[in-house]
Length: 455
Image (tube, rainbow, N blue to C red; front, side, top):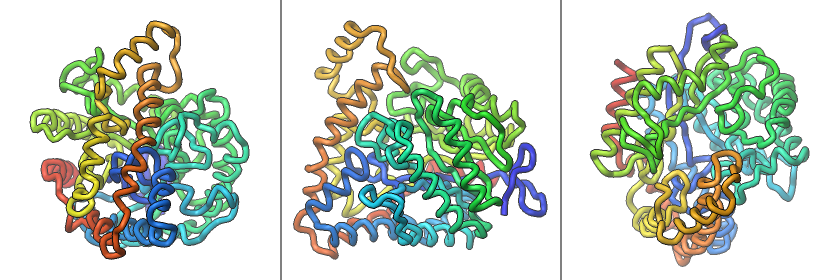
């Protein structure tokens, strides 16, 4: 079982381990740009249930969870040389909002299966609670249908999260292939005053259930602000996220300017040094929980994105930094591999419409439908020049409210209707589009990672 020793993670016989691997995004916490639907996961599931009914919707989603990660996926990651997978999960696998505090043990079924597959190949898992009750941040990836992170406003949501973590920690307390727990992904506490006391309470509760496993704690404001920590907890990694501005969908060129900000190798290194200052000052391990560029399909642009990744990996290698690349498998935006076949045949035009309208935040260039939205941005800037909403300002907030919430939710019925009239076999065929043997491999990315991990 791993533990923290100074600036390193080490085994029980004190052999150092640098965790390097990938995030399993879009699996037990589905995301719109990863799995190809609009809006947020719970709204999507509700819309699909409205078409298929509860039983057949469950059949589809369970088959999707089964097909998304199998022995072959674990083999591929081992062959690449990875020793860690960060596994995002949604609290709704264990608890429903209409029956709070009642734990459904079936939530462990797929998670146990994948942790077992990885452990058999010498790969550690970090369990990441990506969506908490009430939503811990302002965006879709916490399964948030609004722009309000209500988790920080209601003690009830916090109580439920603590209780769930007590259950998870007790379940895995003796599992040596669980590297540890990442209990709050990318928190967004607007005030910055609730998160510190909440972490104190959460750490105490998890330690009571499982005193051995490492805690991986994200800073506030999406794992970038560590001023909220009031103490350096024992056996803890303070996790930073390190996305490069030039690697966003609206980023580039590289080297070059993105929305007036210069980005090159030196700037990547300066940004990383700033983001990791807390870890250096406290003498705790350096681990990047998420990073990675978005790919466009344009060979010239993607060549620049691969160079961003090479430069970041070189920076991490030089400083003995662990990392978890985002993300392993999707429908074509970021994954090492991406789905094809029946799923893309049925939903390809919905995915294209999402791209055309820019309704997925992570895939948006911020310029889609500019003839409609540019006047709104101009109006907001002119009439409310002092408005600077948390976390990223007026331009992003306006796009979030109009594109990524309103328009995305309006597109949900169109996605769900594509399930109408399908047989059980056809539903299984859709889900099986995510089997590795049916996926397209992003070979330049696989080659880049293999060379880094085995070089």
